[in-house]
Length: 86
Image (tube, rainbow, N blue to C red; front, side):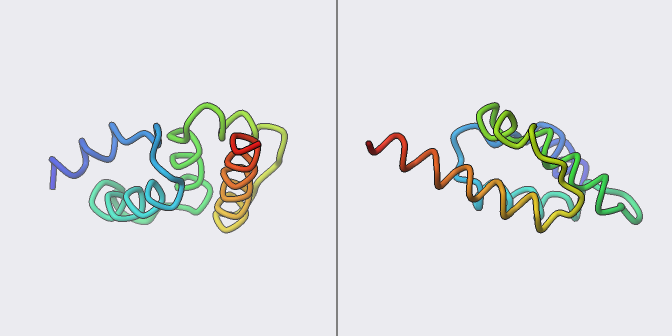
């Protein structure tokens, strides 16, 4: 369990697709987050681990729910792919 906690603490999105990162984040969070965690805390932990481009794109938004964070991060990633293709 301590190993999973350390893995969670070191987790960063890096070059991972957002959904892969989110799945890994949620899986490891079960082991790493002790007791009940508020949605706001979980959202902050997730946001702090995003790659710099995604974090920058989201910085202009006030996001209060995890679902909104996921939706916006997916849109940012999709937009980034379209720009790279052009």
